[in-house]
Length: 273
Image: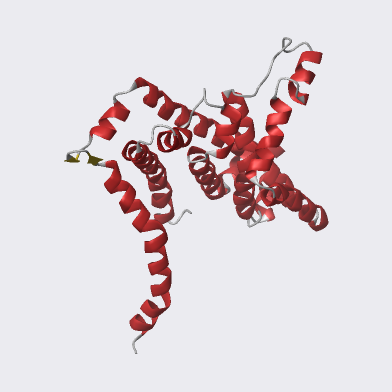
C-alpha cells in the first residue's frame, strides 16, 4: 500500500463528513436560490438587489460588522498585550476571566444585556442620573445595543488570536527599541503592532464573519425594527415561507464572507500568516 493510498484512507472519513455536513447543504442552498415556479431563475437575487429595504439590511450588516470588528481590535490588542506582560499566575486568571463568558450560552448573555439596556435597566438609569440621557431613555432595540452585545460576545476571539502572536514576540526586540530611545508607545507602534498583525488579521476575520452571520444577539437586542441579514433570512423562512428568497439572501451572505476570506488566504499564502 502506497503512502498516497494510506493518506487517502486516513482523510477519507473526514472528507466524507465534510461533504455531507457542509458541501451538500451549500449545494442545496445554491440550487434553491435559483429555483422559481417556471424553473431556473435569478429573480430572487434581482428582487433582493432591487429592493431598497433589503439593500439597507445588507449595508447595515456590513457596517455593523466592520464597526464591531474595529472595536474588538481596539480593545483586544491592548488587553492581549497586558495579559502577555503580567506574571504567569495573573495571566492564568486573566485568560480564565476572558474565556469564562464562552462557557455561558449566547442566549443567556444576550438576555442579560436586554435587562441592562432596557428602559429600567442599570445603564440607562446611570446615564439619566448623570444627566446624559432623558427620562424614558433606553438602548434596547438600537444599533448601539447590537454593537455592545456583539463586542462582548466576540472580544475573546479577537484577544486570544492576538495573544497567541504577541506571546511569541521576543522581548529582546522591545528592549532594543527602548535602548535606541523609543518611548513605550513608540515601541508598541513600531515593534509590537507590526509583529502582531497576523493575530489582528486572524481575529478580525473571526470577528467580522461571526458578526455578519450572527442571529441571536442582533435579533434579541435589535428587535424586529432593526434587521441584519441573518434575521432577514430567518423572517423569510418563518414568516413569509419564501425559502428560495431566503436561500438567495443566504447565498449573498455566504459570498460576502468568502470575499473577506480571500485577502486573508493571500496573506497566508505569502507566508505572513
